[in-house]
Image (cartoon, rainbow, N blue to C red; front, side):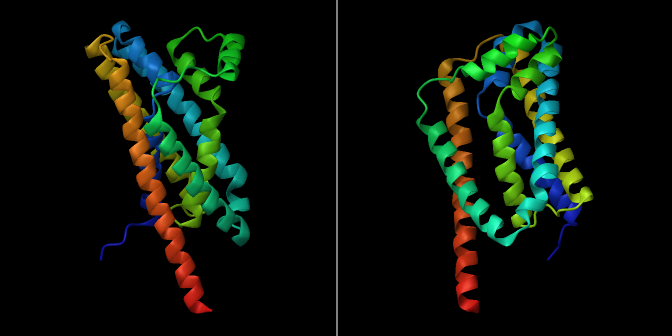
Length: 223
C-alpha cells in the first residue's frame, strides 16, 4: 500500500480543512456575494485578505499550542472537546433558519479599524471573528493527536501552506461565481450552503467519534 510522505499528508490535511472551514456563510462570504457586481478582482482581494488572516490564526494555533497538545492527558481531553465542538457546530449550521449577522464584537472591531480597501475588508472581518482561532486550536489538537501533522516546523509549515491554498481556492471560486451571478444568491441558497457545511462537520465529528471509540477499545485490550 502506497504511504504518502508526512509532509504531503500535512499539506493535504491543511488544504482540506482550510477549504471546509471557509464554506460556512459568514461576514466574508456574505461580503463577497453581496458585492459581486463590483467584479472578480474586488471579491478576490476580499478573499485573499481573509485567507491571510485565516493563515495567521492557524499559525498561532500551531505555534502557541502544539507543545501543549503533546501531553497525553491534554490529547485525550482535547479529542473529546473537539468531537463535541464539531458536533455542536454541525447541528447549529443544519438547524439554522436565517443567515447570521455580524456579532456586536465583530461590528465594534470593524468600526474601530474601518478598512478602506477590499483586501483589508476581508482581513479585518476574519480577524474580528475569534471563533476562527478557537476552531483552529481544536483542529490543531486533532491533527497532532492523529499524527496527520507532525509537531515539527516542516510539518506545521506544510499544513499552514495547505490552509492558505484551501481558503484561497474557496474565496477565489466564490468571487468568480459572485461576479457572474450579480447578487443572485438568495437567502435560501445561502442556507443550503450553510446546511451543507453543517453536514460536512457532522460527518467529521462522526469519523472522529469512531476513532476515539476505537482507540479506547485498543487501550482496553492492552490492559
